[in-house]
Image (cartoon, rainbow, N blue to C red):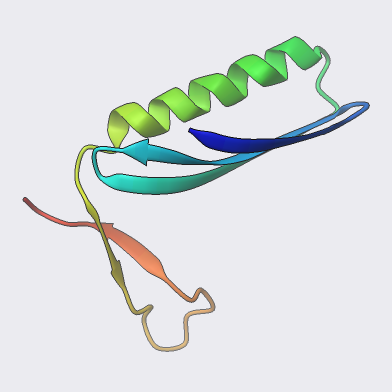
Amino acid sequence: VAHKTGNLPSVIHDAGIITTPAGPLIVAALAEAMPAEGRAFEVIQQLALVVYETAERPLRWEEPPRGATSRAVHSWQER
């Protein structure tokens, strides 16, 4: 994992690249007004673990459907 945090009072942000069996995935977590900052760190750590453990198949990037606002759409490539 390569990541960069950005924390201020009551704001916890973390963005990173997680190297998975499916290839690198970019994840960003933004938390604001958390009752306990420690809990925000735990949730972000759990999110990274879930992303790593569930990314088993390579991602295939496709052009979005005509009229879509997103530049890229991902779908799971069958093995």
